[in-house]
Amino acid sequence: MPSPLDRFLGDSAEDVDLDAREAEASENLRALVSPDSYGIDDCDVTDVVEVNEGPEGEPIVVPVARFSLGKEKESPDLDVVWDLAYDAVRAIYPAFEDVFVRHYDVQFAFGGSGLFDSESCRRMAVTREIADRAVTEAGWHVSDFEAAMLGGHDIDDEIAPVAWGECTDYDQGPYGGNGAGAAGAGGF
Image (cartoon, rainbow, N blue to C red; front, side, top):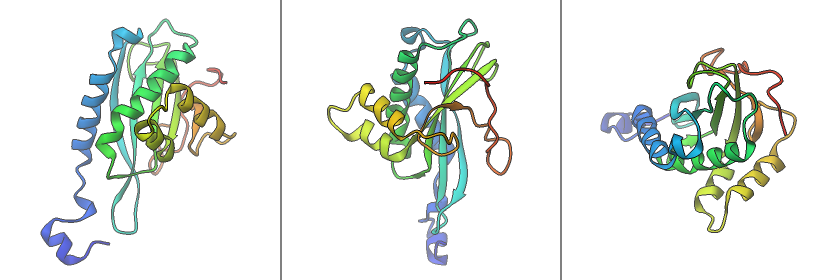
């Protein structure tokens, strides 16, 4: 908990402006990922969910980036999905560099007509450690990102890393928790 002096001076973790962080991350994502070059409909940072509070009152967050792969897609091109997930993490990471991030949620909507109108939704939940490596390690590429995600993913789609799980609807439950997405959308 911040001290009364910290609260008075405004120098506490509670002063983190998550809306500003979301706007910065969204701008970064749109600057790095052009929907036309990837053959997708749209992309955006659609939410920053505060899932908990740290011991000093700091927010613990999950930034959510979402890609609309298009209404004609029944089964996404996984090479494109890995590229998009890698680029999403690299784009949104700087906006949350000094915020406690539980994981980065990168969602893929397909079979519908927009970011939130889809028949299917799958996600990758990327740990802070994997994101750190994607951003800071020279020579680390999409193939390294993919290998780290697949190597760390177990059968639990609730705990990052998740390489291709059902989307989490963070508007349900205490901060989410119930998967909302496509059963049978495929996997690795």
